[in-house]
Length: 389
Image 1: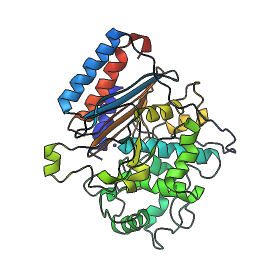
Image 2: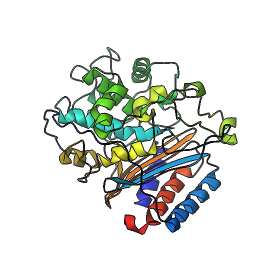
Image 3: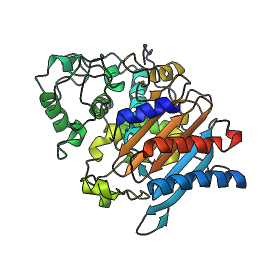
Image 4: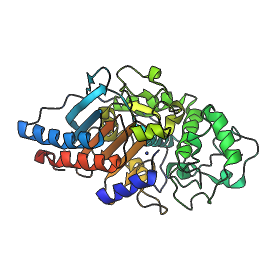
């Protein structure tokens, strides 16, 4: 798994399924218990985990790290390391919230697939234009290639443009609303490829999916995901991030940038994170991410919130990129995961074929941290033989 995940981490840079699904009424109401406390590890294994974590914290000067691991539907580790705020020195707990950056994308994908199961939308439905789900909501005159974009294209980053490079629309025009930004982008950033032909990681594509969710449910994006996904997983603490230090939620950590990042003008509180909602805007506990992953992992316990055939479609890659499906990076093991990265944040959520789900969150970002955090979590998992990683 490691090599393909590293390749994915490189592909997403500094920012973070084929087949029909038969529609059916959403009659299943699955409400899981909140994340329970994990049992205490034997002393030797606690020490092994602490040693692995300390090396990571010291190497990257990480103020706070939160990790959670579950095996076969039950938590086996929930732990916070370091301090939530360097000024107050408040110890980090497993209940502290972090920005999760692009780990938001699997939540948006799951919400879309929930609506697919309900028959409200299909993977090959158009997004824009006369026959599109969003119609002409973002401009009466649309380029012809834009009118070819489907739900599948947005989920799989094959819409034909709007990549997370220097001109990523989501990091431009910070004062614009979603509607203003989408209309501006459709008019000013033409697609570079035919939809469906090429993989190109697109935050903006997931921004559009957020608006699709709003249009179909009649609810604000966060409330739509709460209804379609979070409530069914027993998650009550997740919410959309604020932008400034003053906007921090209760129990949210403080985010930091290393000196070089500050000199380059990259600051955790200098972005419109709230507008990133559906591609990178959520805050969560590490255990919330694991709680979600356990409910879409394809294993029997706890019960999944989507049908088996839906999950298979959601985690099947396209020909354009055999390492990415619909909101999930995947490999042949099969392991599924997603990473996220923003100034002040690195995040990771993983589901392994061996029945483990885990997550890791930090309140700082540094060069090389993403791949090292992935390696750290594998080392931790393998440090406890009874987990059978």
